Image (cartoon, rainbow, N blue to C red):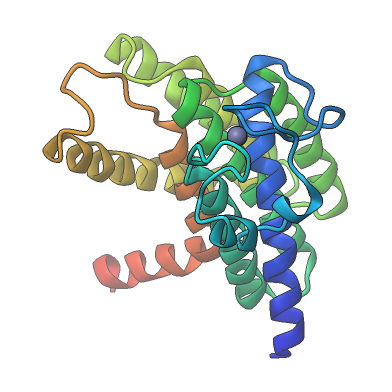
Length: 252
Ligand SMILES: [Zn+2]
């Protein structure tokens, strides 16, 4: 594999990741993310061009604002690094295909949802509506087999979490329901079910870890969105391998 293409995809991922972090922080507060320039959240000094290079800016400034020395949240370089890494993983897994484009769309949604849900316990409707439309257009261009698998996926994702919400009286939120429904359009029925299964596992592991390190208390609300989107990325990239492994392990 050409290392220049790999580097190009990673760098593109980090630049977009920087933008997704801003969207995730601003969209829930209705701050426009395309017009106003980025500024230090502490002293409001607008960032210079040299402060906007993904990863490097954070490393060179040692995670502090040049102006007021206030420390910059680790989520900035993390969002950049994770997006770059996932774009790279998707390319290695899928090559330069339409499904790779679908993976990049999914990763974009995943990073924005994670930033927003971790910071505000909220997945903005506007974001989900935007990606629902994007996924529908994508699945018209590159349909699932059969094409109506998108409809099954969306309805099932929506319906299952609705049942969980009713039965658990608030264990999951309406945002999670709309999120899995939106993902269902892209992923179809099987991968949507796998996503929910993996999300439950990931969510349990993360919440138990956070509880045991006392990062959160037993009664604290716990955002489930990040577990869902991480599970969705794993399912999209490795889902059919995982399902095959499962069948071979238990039915052969
Ligand atoms: Zn500052």
